[in-house]
Every structure is written in C-alpha cells, then in structure tokens.
Image (cartoon, rainbow, N blue to C red; front, top):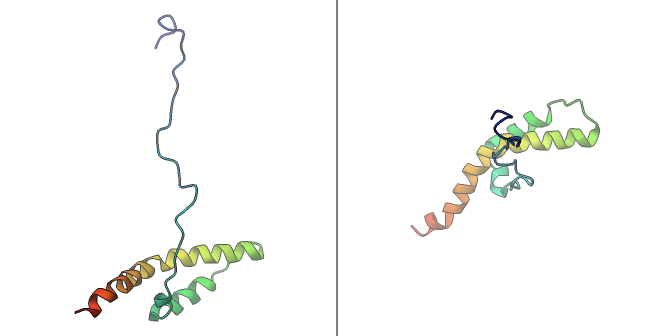
Length: 89
C-alpha cells in the first residue's frame, strides 16, 4: 500500500507448520533382528566412515541405521501385529 494512504507497515507471516520439536521415537522390533536382511543392513551402515568425534560418529551411525531399517521395521511390525489374527485361522 502506498504510504500516503496508510501509515501502517504490512507484516509478513510464515504460516507453515513448524518442524517436530520431538521426532517420533523409533522402535526396533525384536522380530526384525531375526530377518535375513538385518545383519546385512547393520554391517553396511556400521562400516560407513563419518568425520565426527567418537560419540558423534555413534550418533550418526545410529541415525543412518534408523533410516535404513525403517521400511524393514514397518514390514515386520505389520507381520507381528497380524500374527494373533493369523493364528486364529
């Protein structure tokens, strides 16, 4: 708006949702550790090199492992949740 019409200054607001302050926790189901791909994924992630201090490197590897195991974990958790239903058949 032209300054001769109004003496107010417009405010710009960002209305996008904020990032999660506390990310959803990752649950590693015990049944996932028995899956044939688990050990392979674990070895691949743990052999990656990170240029961090020791504790940062462990944190980075755990974060990468979480990302790699997410699909397998979801698949296996659905399997585990459906087991009682399948046992009734």
